[in-house]
Amino acid sequence: MKYTDTRDKSVSVNFRTAVLNGMNAQTGGLYIPKSFPKLDPDFLNKVPEASFRDVAFKMAKPYAEGEIPDSDLESIIQDCYPFTAQVIPVDSVSYILELFHGPTCAFKDFGARFMARTMSYFNRGENDNLHILVATSGDTGSAVGSAFHNVEGIDVTILYPDGKISPLQEKQLSTFDGNVRALKVNGTFDDCQKLVKTAFTDVDLRKKFRLSSANSINISRLLPQAFYYMYSSLVVRNRIPGDSKIENPAIIMTVPSGNFGNLTSVLIAREMGAPITGFIAATNSNHTIPDWIATGKYEARPSVATLSNAMDVGAPSNYERIAAMYSLDEVKNLFASYWTDDKGTLEGIKNCCEKTGYIIDPHGAVAWMAWNEIRNGGMEKLLKGEKNDYTKPGLTPNVPFWAESVVNKKAVNIILETAHPAKFGATVEKAINREPSMPDRLEKVLSLPDRAIPMEKDYDSFKEWLVSNL
Ligand SMILES: *Cc1c(COP(=O)(O)O)cnc(C)c1O
Image (cartoon, rainbow, N blue to C red):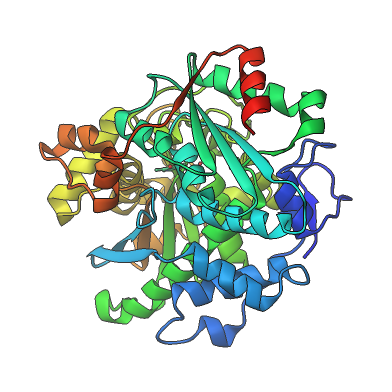
């Protein structure tokens, strides 16, 4: 597969280049595959559906063709996914897709583990280790640290702002040993990011070390997220005859979104033939994308802090990929879009628990609210021509092509549960007066020794540390 970029269609690079570079430094653009090959209908139509790992292999294959032989790709997939995505029905037309069964209990494990293993694969044969630097304000760092832990040929240094992340998040970042270490920086997240950016532009340092980033714009994090969309849509399609008995229903995916990487991945899955009809993009008070859909104007802005903090992004980087793949009219036709505030998020946790008994985390709760708004009259109003005020919580006024199917009760929904509720125990307790139970792997991390290294926020101290420790 050849990859082009969002800013210059004449760019054409292979998978290795796209993975190791992350973005195109010449244009500032993000890499996207030149095509999204459809999977074979015989494979898609199988009953029962293929396993998650078989789906993953089939989907990854065209993107690595000619660069990673099948047997190696198969080993990478096996090593990435000792866990899977789970589909939980909560009422006759709603399913929750649990994406938190990986080591750090968030969906980012799916992408980060594949990225780590493909980077390591492409780094074989080099004499030096590749050094990954990441600044994190929370979840990304732990998924990346865990994904690269004990992966050959790669070292990881994570920078986080001391005292500004949750105690559980800090434990998840600071307890690695071996090839992954954490620096607790005496400063803010922006200071951490500045240190990393300065290191990347330091010619002297780059002569000494091979540096790379591992952020969410890397195409090798987005492709594997398409695996669980494909897999879950096949599972649900095959379950429908026993659950709701609706004939040929529309399958709608509700995606709680921040940087919109996860939403870009569902577009890829649909292009590859997943039986997915449309999407709901659900955000918190950081509603840059809903506003773009409502007004046609994209205006990035500073982020605001919310209860679903992994979605606190005011300038979503994958907007650029979505806009490169589809026109605004196509987006309005495919997507419903919705946003809610903290009050709505707490209401979502409470409502989901009361209606179904399922304890959902604050990110999933935003998606739950969006689906409820749509199925309980929100879409009907839009179809009748009522125009919502997009500056208030709720749906944006566009009417996607699948709107009638929801109104006529011919649609089912899959809600993405992107993190385990125990990671946000205090918020969940506030909503339902009960704390979710802690999975063993989170409990375990709480008892590990803290190994974070204190670091000042000036670049000279950081560089000195890198030079003497890498
Ligand atoms: C990162 C994250 C999101 C947002 O995903 P994007 O791909 O950035 O839109 C949602 N929920 C959780 C728990 C996350 O960690």
